[in-house]
Amino acid sequence: MPADFDEKTDRYEEMFADALAAAEVAVPKSTPLGEAAGEVREMALSYLEDGRHFRENDDPVNALAAFSYGYGWLDAGVRLGLFEIPDDSDLFTMA
Image: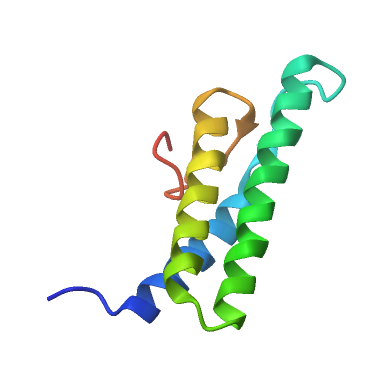
């Protein structure tokens, strides 16, 4: 049985927001990698805000897409070593 779309969108928003809060920049901020980490975090935060905007405007399809894309940006930053995550986290593919 497929997941309820609203429930899935709620779950992705919550997981993404939790992941964004858990990820800490792991590289010196004054370096090119630090700048890259800042850009990845900014892009992820923008997707979170966009997703919330879409939900408020009754556009759940684009909301879920925004949460998914933003989560992907953040997860890529973790895989690249730009962010540290808690060892016990199940919010990322590398945890």
